[in-house]
Length: 489
Image (cartoon, rainbow, N blue to C red; front, side, top):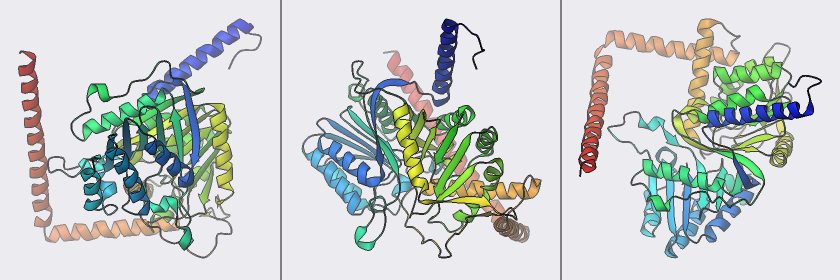
């Protein structure tokens, strides 16, 4: 805050200094610099995102870089496959990355085989390998599309009919959000794609990687491209920073919320300090246990004054935030440990009042189709006037690793609360503690009676891990020796 009576010139210098420090803090937290001069367009649901994606693909002249956690082998997926194949036949370089876990049960081998046979360069991120026993923990959860280094898209949408909806069956589309980007930021998206491409095989040639055009400035929006990699936590640091700096409003939308303790405390502190903190999450889910577990995590937020809303539509899959009508983010990162620390994710962090205003308007529109969750007189978490009919289970669309991580974190929180008594345990959580306790007791009895059930699997696990480490060490040794030999030539 500027002291009263400060000379205008000094006040201006002080404000400039504060802005510079804030920019530095964001740049270091995100690991991404602020990029000026961009054009950004907000796209709501598949009805706006998919046509824009297909139009960009159809207009491609040089290359298409498409990175999606899941592409379903259904009518929607085949529409995109046909579009990519058509451009490959015209001589456009088409590169496609999908995630192995995301592809399990969603697309057949024939689907990928057809794409490859027609000239699309398809790669799978992190398929199972014996020498990486825990490689499955890292997923490529990004949803990006870049065309010719001129236009890019970042969103929470995968490709599948659940996002498009099925009007003939009265099945509504999933609610999701994306952005269309033009300007120097697109080069950052291209370079992020090239980084993951190199993680999946032979890297792109240096001259094929798009670099920013210093003269390209089609808009006025300042933004950061936050391309998170496993174990980096860039978006987590940004989310923490925004929760700390928000002065008036912080409105969040998330598909698989399972906030870590440090982030929950950041939201609680903001709400206690008078910030209007709101969290919009889905009501419907494709995992039956997830809904009561989600509500079990609401208490800490509600008690601090955070307002929690549940979407009443078929599925809310968006991952967005907007603060103080000045700052916003859109992308693939969920507010849970899998997204923050385990996955490759892609988000754009925008510092533009016009865009943030559009995000706030979209959030308020979404709240019209949501029910606010409250604490009743008995301090139980509930939804007032909730209909008695149960929500239908949804077909799997995306984010299964995020759902699993969210559920695991919530179960761990329940067990931790039972041990430490740091908060009141809800009735549904009592059932969880009994179930976990019973399971552990049964395992203890089983292992006491049959100790070899523990010993043999551990021997196999240790041999597997040791072999994997030795193999990778040998590969690294050979690579280093080859590099040294090449450098001496």
